[in-house]
Length: 313
Image 1 (cartoon, one colour):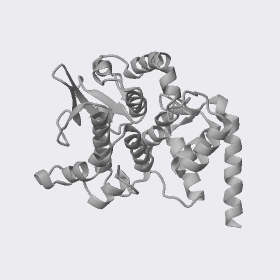
Image 2 (image 1 turned 180 degrees about the vertical axis):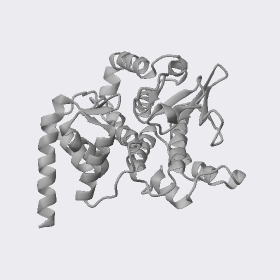
Image 3 (image 1 turned 60 degrees about the vertical axis):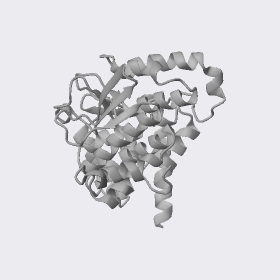
Image 4 (image 1 turned 90 degrees about the horizontal axis):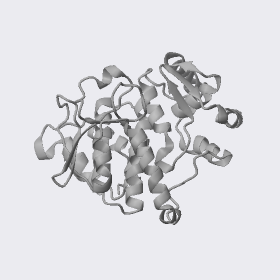
């Protein structure tokens, strides 16, 4: 596994991910010298999470960061038992990979950082669309968080990938189908999962978990979203303005616009570390905070602001 460096750093170093140059292309170097070092789904999932948190304020080539996201998802599939073809960038149908299980199953994949219908235009209708967060596109998709959970469980309980691959080629709402299948897995393998503490079966956030999550693990744009939505519901444009006001107060780089909200939502979805309830809900163009966590997040905001005041005295 790569140590002390993340995909965001590699993209900054390479400048641009491209297929140009054949075997010595920056894309092949990224795969050969970086991605190939990963040995577990959990480490890839953590890197994807970091990439999505960095995406809204990334100061390099954002297209290349999107390409890195696609290749990280491809590597996640490889580690879960698929044979993967890394498709050339900028394909006509926006296919980013082809996942295979023997000769019986072949899944075309489009893993893209996408926030609305316009950005998804041109993606092949028969492709498995893998998004940072759930949005209404009028077509089937799976979120990378849900997919990461599934692949982690496959590794934890040592299931052959062929036993679950068919779920991903079903023309339906993939999140719902995967959720149903995961419930069966949890029931059937509860004892095995109980011996694997890295998979949490607790869905509700405790006060301690939520405070640690916000104060220690989130970056400022994501914290700004949570704190801003204490006054939710809020339209995307208004939410971006509130987040940027928060970032200005904390002397941090501003997010680039409503498109950044999709990446923030993807990073916020902490399905990677266990089955947890959503903190932010999207309803069309409106975002709102889950009502049950509003009082806790309000308390955490007060402590955050007290800490900032103490540091500036």
